[in-house]
Amino acid sequence: MCAILVLKSAIAYAAIIPLLATPAPPSVWKKAPMYRDQLIAELKLCIEPLLPGYLAIFDLADTKRRNLYLGHEEVDKDILEFDTLLKAHLGKAFKRIGGDRWVAFVTENQLNVFDRLILAYQKEVPISAGWECRAIAPNSTLVHIEEKTDVLISRAVRCGYLNIQDINDVAARVNDLLEKIWRLPVNSATSLEQELTFNEPKWKCIIGNLPSTAYCPFCKGTRFEWIEGTDDTAYGICMDCSAEVDFIYGRI
Image (cartoon, rainbow, N blue to C red; front, side):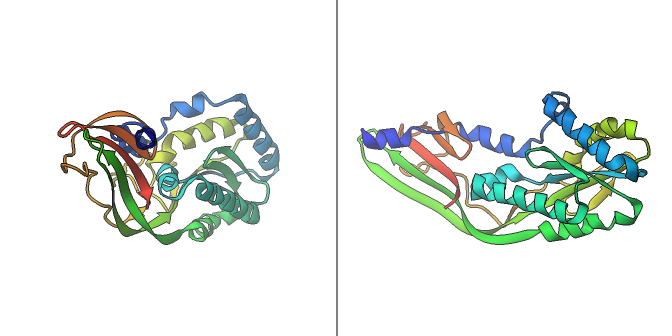
């Protein structure tokens, strides 16, 4: 009975990959709580004496996948570290407007700060990643297997910027930046004054090949009826041998 209780946790694995691959839609900004308007108002007070210049947006890339493989505490450290970098380079001329996004202001003479921030944030570390499975067959036989491999997990930031001349245009410019940031390449500062087309696949923080598709420990089948779960687990029933399977994905 205890083994069965251990098994029952998770969302359908099929829902995990689309979640990781889908960027936040532009409408997120339009539905933002009122406190974000207050942050923009505070930023305007700070930057008005410095105009003209550039508004920039910074987005820590693929944080959902980093959270999956490293845990939320490590991603929290990423956010704190980048916030500290912004303070060191820009003083008070920035605001964090989302979990892993900031809007900042720079003058013409400060444009090279983008490259310094991007370089300072980059990092790669080795980890063992993959999946493990605890399963119970219809005859109550228990088994535990894991598939893992050594890969690198990296961190990167997207950066886009627009010219700003009039303090009354700040809110609209921020909205433009938020709508475009998810399409930008990582680790480079991109001017958004003109419409750009990007054909590269969405960047992923994992460098290397992860283990093959999860399979049933009893029959090696890969067809499952998923029942429940979380971002990094999936519980269901093997459609070939009826075993109960509980998968955990991430750092092993």
